Length: 383
Ligand SMILES: Cc1cc2nc3c(=O)[nH]c(=O)nc-3n(C[C@H](O)[C@H](O)[C@H](O)COP(=O)(O)OP(=O)(O)OC[C@H]3O[C@@H](n4cnc5c(N)ncnc54)[C@H](O)[C@@H]3O)c2cc1C
Image (cartoon, rainbow, N blue to C red; front, top):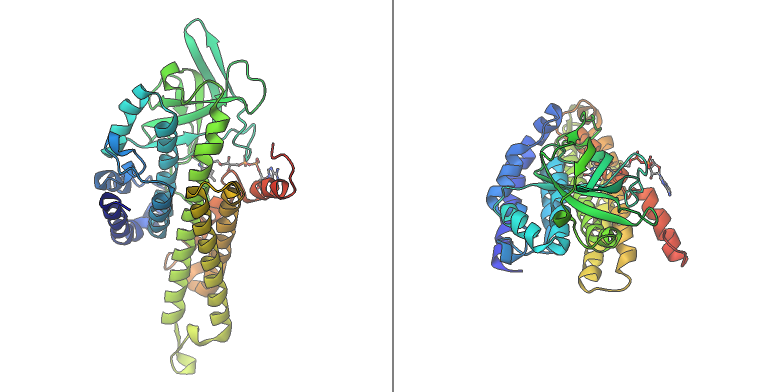
């Protein structure tokens, strides 16, 4: 790992501990976008983590992204989810953007002045986010798009959006294009933010595109290559990044529960701690096993992706599901151990428990991933 990246990892650790964690409950209760955290990520160079060095970024890859996101999610999961979608968008632009798009966007990302995100999901295909029902049309003026994107992280807050749609004259639902659409483009509007159960700060909202003019130079890759980009670029970044966020949330839940059971004392037993009770120790052991086995699987998945192992795709599919399940299991036990204090929203555990729910319902959902994985295990086609 180069010094610039080491430095960013250290800055992120400090920010997460000293800035993100102390502010996370207030951001959740206010259901507000953590603009100050995003500014801090920008100023420290962390928004440019995946930007190639020739455009002024750190030139880091998936292993460093995973490390950074897990640490960020320990402090503020909403901030980590915003960063995850930004890293996915950045990776697509760096891999598939034209020379002009890269020159226009990547230096700004590296300077921390540009946040991007993904606008893929549509109500018409839901958890099957890889199959948009909207379609690019072409008239005399060039390509346009009308679409309803159902959930977009950083909606209205990001400076640009990587948008998916079926290409003109698509042969089927997987024959898609990806376009970069800048904020403020005519016909591109944020609809009412929904009140999510968790990740309340990530500004998720539907977005409506009404005859939005698409700049052919901002198509990311050749016409019809969008699905391949989803598989080769978005999927490894998103799956591993989402798993890292889940693990960060799980680690925060575990830590909060350990602190609670160590500090909670009973007068009627002469001041013994909750931690002295065997059932509490048993739950702590189960939490530690969930966390450690999911982290081991994540590290193995990253190793295989970096080594370009032909089996890596199975783990890329599996790790998001496994980490999301581990996060739910740890957070649920942490709530049990937190008792009335956690139920009464003291100590942050209840917020962490709600945040833990998000990764399993974000597409590809845990069940959809198991559907894919089962097919892959049995040698059946995935699509
Ligand atoms: C906090 C949050 C942030 C998000 N951010 C973004 C974003 O930035 N960009 C973006 O594009 N999208 C984003 N999404 C959207 C997300 O990726 C999904 O598209 C969305 O959550 C799917 O919801 P749905 O209700 O339409 O799913 P549905 O398709 O209605 O699915 C409902 C349930 O059915 C199950 N199901 C469906 N098909 C199968 C199957 N074949 N096998 C087994 N079970 C199945 C699913 O697992 C799910 O549990 C976000 C979602 C959340 C919750």
